Image (cartoon, rainbow, N blue to C red; front, top):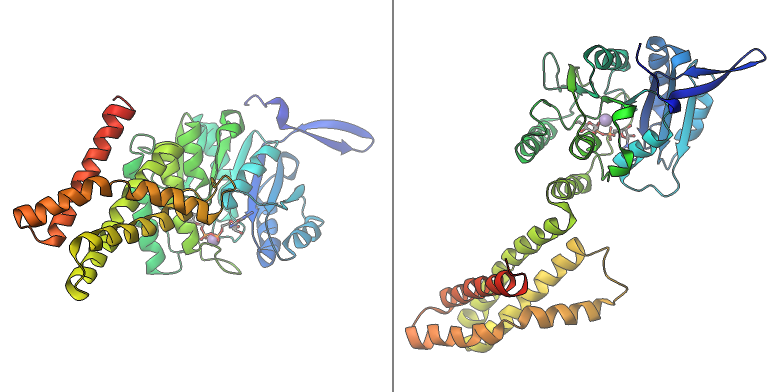
Length: 381
Ligand code: GDD
Ligand code: MN
């Protein structure tokens, strides 16, 4: 038998005696409006897990009466059930799971969805495999052995799932060598291997978060067939997809390098409004190319500001007003015109280059010069 950590003790009453009973496993279930799935989920879990060694912890962010349904159904369930309803839900699904990990007292923590896409009958096998193989983490996999993904509603979701799994495996090659399904929402983790304080959950991919930041020792996989949803509908949205991209970049680069890459990509995207505006002004409206280039630059800087301010620095605005942020950004973004305008004149009037290609050349040169100054003068690399 394995040693049971101190926190894995549950106080139970037998007759007049209060005794400490070891909690072998805590099942952590995040819920968001899952009222119609609760009865079946509890019934099927209770049918396969020993009630005296198990606890179920729901972490709920629902806007419907799911917590009431859970409390009512818990009366008919042999396994002790608790519900933690979050009033200010941070981190979405992943945040809920981490909250459940904090509350869990089991030697093993099993994480699963409430909608029965994860068959409850697998849960004992996950823990048994972990004990048998001396693993820290057992991943329920749709992509190894006999695992399948048939429960994914449509081809579009399968494509997104396949694509994001592949990207993730490329980005985190070494950490994921032995994990075929890092996006799985079904897994069991040895509580003593967890370092909850290190986790920064953001949305759905809590397993990935755990593997990258906690680096569990031995990882094994148990194949399973991902089922269609029992009741209700998926909570995954386009917004959740964008959150995943942000999560990936945070995991890979950390907060600042992620912002720097975002800054570069947005800057690059500014080439489009810049060139488009210049063409419109010069070729369609007949404006002289120098004021046209200045105006085009201002339009591109405004475009960059809109994206950078809303996507990269939304939570870091220091209480400044939109106008104040915009003016500072605008000043900085147009400063390079001091270099670009003379260069543009040289290329167009001196060399006879076309306005659009000359503009592009000055943008590239300005980019390189600014990078070199940043690199060699400001940061001394
Ligand atoms: N507490 C809480 N807060 N629970 C949430 C939240 C939230 O913001 N969002 C979703 N949940 C709960 C749901 O109620 C459900 O129990 C579980 O998390 C999964 O949500 P679904 O909406 O059913 O997700 P899915 O089926 O699209 O995605 C599942 O499968 C994917 C694999 O295709 C999840 O397990 C993903 O993690 C997994 O990658
Ligand atoms: Mn689901």
